Image (cartoon, rainbow, N blue to C red; front, side, top):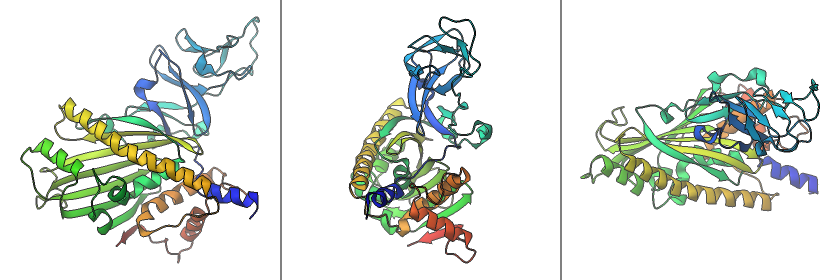
Length: 396
């Protein structure tokens, strides 16, 4: 195997990211007028700030003149940003409004301006073709600012490809082994689950564990609701993936026999784990997460405890994902293999593969084609293939 072959094998495990998509660029409070935010979104360095009217702005983080980072500059007037090197100024559309030592503006003097929308406590940016940017396609994360839910979150700068985080979230059996002291229990890998393609860009994975002892995390939450609780529960995990990289997980427990599997969750505790992952480079990602709940909404103590508890849990994931990325890079001649538990993740790769093909970024000679995802896509075209009727699947 020559060096080129080795590189392609590594790239097969490094999934490319679509560009024609909305990605979370930051929390709403991160984009302000006090400090220009520099952040790379899907491989594109951008400078984020707000106009005096409060409108978020995303410009390429490189001056038209000598490519100095605009994020090192200053905000001027109602909506302009000034280059820190020679003082060129740009408006919110990226158009140059001032050149140093000359009155005539060069008509080509501008920097790219990216479509940007503020929604669900995040600022979303579209790094691809701006004519395709439709705000109605921003993933539904309404629990983040819905008054019927309370909670908070943080950001992880994850040292791994974004697809590894999606794989992690689409298969929660890893909780049994990675989060044994908080969320893990044997029933995670022993219970049945179903995987369903809800629409072209939405996949769900549902798992119920009936009449089980609650793990430490959920026992604590039940006692927050009922200090005297000390029983068995029905536990659910319903994962919702929205392309390209948002996963909202409906989780919770209710005392066994109170009707949760039939739809009555009123005796239990319900949370939503909100995750949206933004590719930074091929091997780094901005991972925005929050935990929202629909009980004891007025308790800041519970909000803080849950945020800190989930931060500890996700810290275990971060360490594992970082180690996995290192192992991938250190073993370029090893391949990925899939199990039944990877059904949700395989659907995700298939959807991403389709998005990348629509952008013309998966040519036959591309060194970044994930060979397993291409095989799945080919199977999906075959009406007699194994996945053509896989709108709903069960395993175990």
